[in-house]
Image 1 (tube, helix red, strand yellow):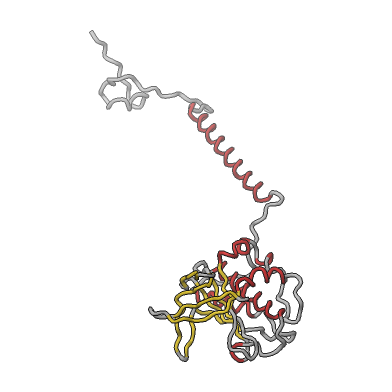
Image 2 (spheres, rainbow, N blue to C red; image 1 turned 135 degrees about the horizontal axis):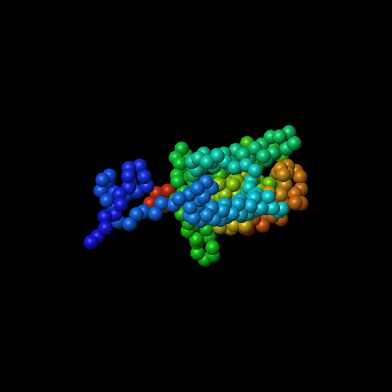
Length: 282
Protein backbone atom coordinates (compact mmCIF):
# COMPACT_ATOMS: atom_id res chain seq x y z
CA UNK A 1 0.00 0.00 0.00
CA UNK A 2 1.44 3.44 -1.03
CA UNK A 3 1.89 6.21 1.45
CA UNK A 4 0.31 9.59 0.92
CA UNK A 5 3.01 12.31 0.86
CA UNK A 6 2.57 14.91 3.58
CA UNK A 7 1.03 18.19 2.55
CA UNK A 8 2.65 21.55 3.31
CA UNK A 9 0.52 24.08 5.07
CA UNK A 10 0.05 27.33 3.14
CA UNK A 11 2.88 29.80 3.59
CA UNK A 12 5.53 27.16 4.24
CA UNK A 13 8.28 25.99 1.88
CA UNK A 14 6.93 23.79 -0.86
CA UNK A 15 3.63 25.62 -1.49
CA UNK A 16 4.82 26.51 -5.06
CA UNK A 17 5.47 22.89 -5.99
CA UNK A 18 1.72 22.06 -6.36
CA UNK A 19 -1.61 23.91 -6.11
CA UNK A 20 -3.00 24.37 -2.65
CA UNK A 21 -4.78 21.28 -1.43
CA UNK A 22 -3.12 18.98 -3.98
CA UNK A 23 -0.25 16.71 -3.12
CA UNK A 24 3.11 17.26 -4.83
CA UNK A 25 3.66 14.50 -7.35
CA UNK A 26 7.38 14.94 -8.06
CA UNK A 27 10.55 15.35 -6.07
CA UNK A 28 10.69 18.49 -4.01
CA UNK A 29 12.83 21.33 -5.40
CA UNK A 30 16.07 21.97 -3.63
CA UNK A 31 16.13 25.53 -2.33
CA UNK A 32 19.52 26.64 -1.05
CA UNK A 33 19.32 27.80 2.48
CA UNK A 34 21.63 30.82 2.64
CA UNK A 35 22.40 32.70 5.72
CA UNK A 36 23.96 36.17 5.91
CA UNK A 37 27.11 36.40 3.78
CA UNK A 38 26.46 33.23 1.80
CA UNK A 39 26.69 33.36 -2.08
CA UNK A 40 25.79 30.80 -4.73
CA UNK A 41 28.71 29.04 -6.40
CA UNK A 42 28.19 30.72 -9.84
CA UNK A 43 28.93 34.17 -8.32
CA UNK A 44 32.57 33.13 -8.03
CA UNK A 45 32.63 32.13 -11.70
CA UNK A 46 31.27 35.53 -12.80
CA UNK A 47 33.86 37.25 -10.66
CA UNK A 48 36.65 35.33 -12.40
CA UNK A 49 35.26 36.10 -15.90
CA UNK A 50 34.78 39.80 -15.19
CA UNK A 51 38.26 40.00 -13.71
CA UNK A 52 39.75 38.45 -16.84
CA UNK A 53 37.85 40.87 -19.11
CA UNK A 54 38.96 43.82 -16.99
CA UNK A 55 42.56 42.64 -17.29
CA UNK A 56 42.31 42.40 -21.09
CA UNK A 57 40.81 45.90 -21.28
CA UNK A 58 43.53 47.40 -19.09
CA UNK A 59 46.22 45.70 -21.19
CA UNK A 60 44.69 47.09 -24.42
CA UNK A 61 44.50 50.61 -22.98
CA UNK A 62 48.07 50.36 -21.77
CA UNK A 63 49.29 49.23 -25.19
CA UNK A 64 47.47 52.12 -26.87
CA UNK A 65 48.97 54.66 -24.46
CA UNK A 66 52.46 53.24 -25.01
CA UNK A 67 51.98 53.39 -28.79
CA UNK A 68 50.89 57.02 -28.69
CA UNK A 69 53.39 58.39 -26.22
CA UNK A 70 56.43 56.24 -26.93
CA UNK A 71 59.51 58.23 -27.96
CA UNK A 72 59.95 58.67 -31.70
CA UNK A 73 56.28 58.12 -32.61
CA UNK A 74 55.15 60.81 -35.07
CA UNK A 75 52.21 61.28 -37.39
CA UNK A 76 53.12 61.35 -41.09
CA UNK A 77 54.12 64.81 -42.27
CA UNK A 78 51.59 66.47 -44.61
CA UNK A 79 52.64 66.67 -48.25
CA UNK A 80 52.24 70.45 -48.23
CA UNK A 81 51.30 73.19 -45.78
CA UNK A 82 48.56 74.33 -48.17
CA UNK A 83 46.04 72.43 -50.23
CA UNK A 84 43.00 73.43 -52.31
CA UNK A 85 39.50 73.03 -50.95
CA UNK A 86 37.70 69.98 -52.30
CA UNK A 87 35.49 70.92 -55.23
CA UNK A 88 35.10 70.52 -58.97
CA UNK A 89 38.16 70.05 -61.17
CA UNK A 90 37.95 73.59 -62.56
CA UNK A 91 37.53 75.14 -59.10
CA UNK A 92 40.48 73.25 -57.63
CA UNK A 93 42.69 73.99 -60.66
CA UNK A 94 41.88 77.71 -60.31
CA UNK A 95 42.77 77.63 -56.61
CA UNK A 96 46.08 75.95 -57.38
CA UNK A 97 46.89 78.44 -60.16
CA UNK A 98 46.11 81.43 -57.93
CA UNK A 99 47.99 80.08 -54.94
CA UNK A 100 51.17 79.27 -56.85
CA UNK A 101 51.25 82.30 -59.17
CA UNK A 102 51.04 84.76 -56.27
CA UNK A 103 54.30 83.36 -54.86
CA UNK A 104 56.40 84.14 -57.96
CA UNK A 105 57.62 87.71 -58.35
CA UNK A 106 59.02 89.55 -61.35
CA UNK A 107 61.18 91.93 -59.33
CA UNK A 108 61.81 93.23 -55.82
CA UNK A 109 58.78 95.55 -56.04
CA UNK A 110 56.53 92.47 -55.79
CA UNK A 111 54.99 92.46 -59.29
CA UNK A 112 53.72 89.03 -60.28
CA UNK A 113 55.93 87.08 -62.68
CA UNK A 114 53.11 85.69 -64.84
CA UNK A 115 49.40 84.97 -64.64
CA UNK A 116 48.45 81.28 -64.66
CA UNK A 117 45.20 80.47 -66.45
CA UNK A 118 43.79 76.93 -66.11
CA UNK A 119 41.43 75.38 -68.65
CA UNK A 120 40.51 72.15 -70.34
CA UNK A 121 42.79 71.50 -73.33
CA UNK A 122 41.53 73.91 -76.02
CA UNK A 123 42.90 76.20 -78.71
CA UNK A 124 41.42 79.36 -80.13
CA UNK A 125 41.03 79.99 -83.84
CA UNK A 126 39.63 83.46 -84.37
CA UNK A 127 36.62 83.53 -82.09
CA UNK A 128 36.18 79.75 -82.00
CA UNK A 129 37.42 77.46 -79.25
CA UNK A 130 38.55 74.08 -80.54
CA UNK A 131 38.93 71.16 -78.16
CA UNK A 132 42.19 69.27 -78.11
CA UNK A 133 41.04 65.67 -78.38
CA UNK A 134 44.40 63.91 -78.59
CA UNK A 135 48.07 64.43 -77.81
CA UNK A 136 50.63 62.96 -80.18
CA UNK A 137 54.20 62.75 -78.88
CA UNK A 138 56.81 62.24 -81.56
CA UNK A 139 59.08 59.31 -80.77
CA UNK A 140 61.10 58.58 -83.89
CA UNK A 141 59.96 56.97 -86.08
CA UNK A 142 56.46 56.78 -84.57
CA UNK A 143 54.12 58.80 -82.38
CA UNK A 144 52.69 57.96 -78.98
CA UNK A 145 49.00 58.89 -79.05
CA UNK A 146 47.30 59.87 -75.79
CA UNK A 147 43.73 60.84 -75.06
CA UNK A 148 43.43 64.32 -73.55
CA UNK A 149 40.43 63.57 -71.32
CA UNK A 150 42.69 63.30 -68.24
CA UNK A 151 44.76 66.37 -69.04
CA UNK A 152 44.57 69.87 -67.56
CA UNK A 153 45.99 72.87 -69.37
CA UNK A 154 47.64 75.92 -67.78
CA UNK A 155 48.72 78.98 -69.75
CA UNK A 156 51.57 80.99 -68.20
CA UNK A 157 51.03 84.50 -69.48
CA UNK A 158 53.09 87.65 -68.94
CA UNK A 159 51.78 91.15 -69.48
CA UNK A 160 53.53 91.67 -72.82
CA UNK A 161 52.41 90.90 -76.38
CA UNK A 162 51.32 87.30 -76.97
CA UNK A 163 51.74 86.59 -73.23
CA UNK A 164 55.46 87.44 -73.18
CA UNK A 165 56.97 88.82 -69.99
CA UNK A 166 56.86 92.58 -70.50
CA UNK A 167 59.79 93.78 -68.41
CA UNK A 168 63.14 92.55 -67.24
CA UNK A 169 65.85 90.77 -69.18
CA UNK A 170 65.29 87.28 -70.57
CA UNK A 171 67.77 84.82 -69.07
CA UNK A 172 68.26 81.15 -68.34
CA UNK A 173 67.50 81.89 -64.67
CA UNK A 174 64.16 83.43 -65.59
CA UNK A 175 63.31 80.54 -67.89
CA UNK A 176 64.13 78.06 -65.13
CA UNK A 177 61.97 80.05 -62.69
CA UNK A 178 58.94 79.77 -64.99
CA UNK A 179 59.60 76.04 -65.32
CA UNK A 180 59.80 75.80 -61.53
CA UNK A 181 56.39 77.46 -61.34
CA UNK A 182 54.95 75.06 -63.91
CA UNK A 183 56.40 72.10 -62.01
CA UNK A 184 54.87 73.29 -58.74
CA UNK A 185 51.46 73.78 -60.36
CA UNK A 186 51.66 70.30 -61.88
CA UNK A 187 52.66 68.63 -58.60
CA UNK A 188 49.78 70.25 -56.71
CA UNK A 189 47.42 69.19 -59.50
CA UNK A 190 48.60 65.58 -59.51
CA UNK A 191 48.50 65.37 -55.71
CA UNK A 192 45.05 66.82 -55.09
CA UNK A 193 43.12 66.22 -58.34
CA UNK A 194 43.28 62.43 -58.90
CA UNK A 195 41.42 62.57 -62.22
CA UNK A 196 44.31 64.46 -63.87
CA UNK A 197 47.30 62.43 -65.06
CA UNK A 198 49.00 64.99 -67.32
CA UNK A 199 49.50 68.76 -67.41
CA UNK A 200 50.00 70.89 -70.51
CA UNK A 201 51.81 74.10 -69.51
CA UNK A 202 52.16 76.75 -72.23
CA UNK A 203 55.26 78.87 -71.54
CA UNK A 204 55.49 82.63 -72.22
CA UNK A 205 57.14 83.34 -75.60
CA UNK A 206 60.31 85.38 -75.86
CA UNK A 207 59.65 89.14 -76.31
CA UNK A 208 58.82 89.85 -79.94
CA UNK A 209 57.99 86.21 -80.72
CA UNK A 210 54.54 84.80 -81.43
CA UNK A 211 55.36 81.17 -80.70
CA UNK A 212 56.46 79.43 -77.54
CA UNK A 213 57.27 76.03 -76.19
CA UNK A 214 55.29 74.03 -73.68
CA UNK A 215 55.87 71.56 -70.90
CA UNK A 216 54.01 68.28 -71.06
CA UNK A 217 54.25 66.79 -67.58
CA UNK A 218 52.94 63.30 -66.85
CA UNK A 219 52.01 62.10 -63.37
CA UNK A 220 53.68 58.72 -63.85
CA UNK A 221 57.08 60.46 -64.01
CA UNK A 222 56.72 62.09 -60.57
CA UNK A 223 55.94 59.19 -58.24
CA UNK A 224 58.86 59.97 -55.93
CA UNK A 225 58.03 63.67 -55.73
CA UNK A 226 54.39 62.90 -54.91
CA UNK A 227 55.30 60.41 -52.19
CA UNK A 228 57.51 62.87 -50.28
CA UNK A 229 56.64 66.34 -48.90
CA UNK A 230 56.80 69.12 -51.48
CA UNK A 231 59.53 70.91 -49.52
CA UNK A 232 61.89 67.98 -50.12
CA UNK A 233 61.62 68.68 -53.88
CA UNK A 234 61.35 72.50 -53.86
CA UNK A 235 63.61 73.20 -50.92
CA UNK A 236 63.58 76.98 -50.99
CA UNK A 237 60.96 78.50 -48.67
CA UNK A 238 60.08 81.05 -51.39
CA UNK A 239 60.84 81.17 -55.12
CA UNK A 240 63.89 83.29 -56.01
CA UNK A 241 63.66 86.40 -58.17
CA UNK A 242 64.50 86.04 -61.89
CA UNK A 243 67.76 87.90 -61.30
CA UNK A 244 68.92 85.62 -58.48
CA UNK A 245 71.04 82.54 -59.26
CA UNK A 246 69.54 79.34 -57.89
CA UNK A 247 72.32 77.11 -56.63
CA UNK A 248 69.99 75.10 -54.38
CA UNK A 249 67.32 73.88 -56.79
CA UNK A 250 68.74 74.44 -60.29
CA UNK A 251 69.77 70.82 -60.87
CA UNK A 252 66.49 69.48 -59.49
CA UNK A 253 64.37 71.78 -61.66
CA UNK A 254 66.37 70.93 -64.77
CA UNK A 255 66.23 67.17 -64.17
CA UNK A 256 62.46 67.26 -63.63
CA UNK A 257 61.49 69.58 -66.50
CA UNK A 258 64.03 69.78 -69.34
CA UNK A 259 63.04 66.42 -70.82
CA UNK A 260 59.40 67.59 -70.85
CA UNK A 261 59.92 70.67 -73.07
CA UNK A 262 58.30 70.39 -76.51
CA UNK A 263 57.63 72.51 -79.52
CA UNK A 264 54.14 71.93 -80.83
CA UNK A 265 51.72 72.23 -83.70
CA UNK A 266 48.00 71.66 -84.04
CA UNK A 267 46.37 69.35 -86.52
CA UNK A 268 42.64 69.27 -87.25
CA UNK A 269 40.97 65.90 -86.80
CA UNK A 270 38.43 64.59 -89.28
CA UNK A 271 36.18 63.67 -86.38
CA UNK A 272 36.26 67.21 -85.02
CA UNK A 273 38.58 68.94 -82.62
CA UNK A 274 42.35 69.00 -82.92
CA UNK A 275 45.40 66.93 -82.09
CA UNK A 276 48.29 68.56 -80.23
CA UNK A 277 51.47 67.27 -81.87
CA UNK A 278 54.52 67.48 -79.62
CA UNK A 279 58.11 67.46 -80.84
CA UNK A 280 60.93 67.14 -78.28
CA UNK A 281 62.85 70.40 -77.96
CA UNK A 282 66.46 70.40 -79.05
